[in-house]
Amino acid sequence: MNKVRVAVLISGRGSNLAALIEAARAPDYPAEVVLVISDRADAGGLAIAREAGVPTAVVAYGGAGERDAFEAEIDRLLHEAGVGLICLAGFMRVLSARFVEHWHDRILNIHPSLLPDFPGLDTHARALAAKARVHGCTVHFVRPAVDSGPIILQGQVPVWQGDTPDTLAARVLEVEHQIYPLALRLVAGGFANVVGDAVEIDPGVPDYLTGPAECGHRH
Ligand code: GRF
Image 1 (tube, rainbow, N blue to C red):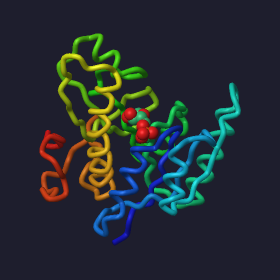
Image 2: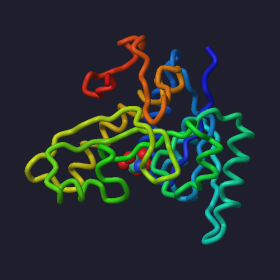
Image 3: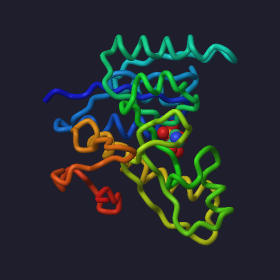
Image 4: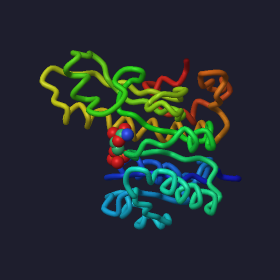
């Protein structure tokens, strides 16, 4: 099988990275993680990658006015590694429109809310403040506007009385670890394609590939 070469961009603890690496161990998984790039040398996810034998790179952001150089270095590393898809997984830098357009439909992101609700930061606290009854996470293709772009998969969790941002975040994170590997499987396998502004999931996708029913990939 010709696997799609994937780079994962991180800034922190890397639990989604771990889920992607773990999923990609399956012989029939259509993608392999070939590179992890962090903008922070102290990101916990770097150790996860090293333990799994995945090459890592740290590209530090030089500060205001340095985004071109930052992105040029990331781009160089991606091309050098023959990357076909990029997964943002807790990567805390906003990528320029130029970078995003260069990698059009080849960058995925996971966001901890049911987009279009609660783009941006502090999603769990904001969902609680809004008295949302359900909350969740979204995997989407990246577009220049932050936390926008065609949605590939969403996973939903209930919000319980007495939840705090931390308890809610933990419930959502479990679902993140299910839907990100699944979304990458669908994209890398050619089952999820952007048509217009939306993602169409091939109705021919075998059920055994799509995991738990609550992931709700079917339209
Ligand atoms: C996740 O909640 C993800 O949705 C958000 O950043 C967090 C990253 O967590 N974009 P981790 O580094 O994958 O553990």
